[in-house]
Image (cartoon, rainbow, N blue to C red; front, top):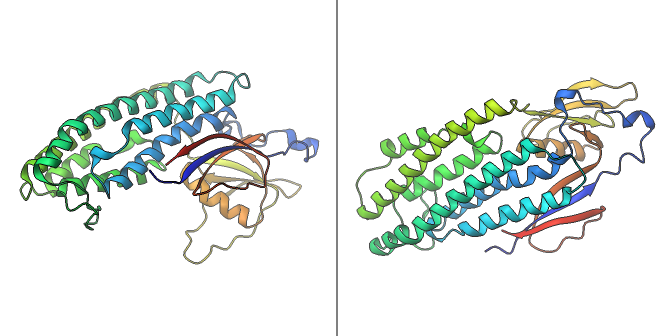
Length: 323
């Protein structure tokens, strides 16, 4: 286990006391507003992005049988409990969002439990029987514990491809059936450690089939019960900064939505992971954020650090977990 920790903190924007009365009026259009409670509930949702990211990195170095599945399950429910506890009696109960988090959390719990049981018995036995313990990276670099099968390399590649995808897109949009097809058409059927190869092939085939079918069901349920999310976030800035991208940095995805009489501007930024880079660039350019998605109260951020941090801004630590 790494010594790094994810520190989830609650930071007050302290806006209301410093702005004139007009600024108390929400500027964001109705369709762009999100409740402040979602600031909290989004964290356990994003944990299910962080966890597959750790899994993908793990497979590039070590066999799937050694991944701490139950540790991740425990951390998810701990995070959900911490966030709901911080929200207690402060907001109306967001039934739809809680249901969504519970569904994906329960699904991940079942998936990780099944994987843990399978890998503890069959995965470890075939590792021992074939002497194929260890991992190679997705690009073929030899791991610290020796070489493994092309199926192991393929699993690491797909795991990382999945993570890259869900940073901006709901997981159920991922094409698991395309991954299954690639497994059977692009990965050689024969080679060294044949028993281990076919055990891995069986495990991956089962995983991609089940996830592909489940994704179809979840997508249908999401479309029936929820409105399609707007892939943009509106931000009210104190002024419109002049931005020049640093060498090697991608161009900003910031669009002007409305210019106020007092120099303030309402802009749209891409939502999800891309929001981070665009918002950071705006902050570095000197822009101050006065409203995000119609909210002016609190903001939650996660910090990854290898040692204790001395944070200069007023904050409350809601959760700290090892990676």
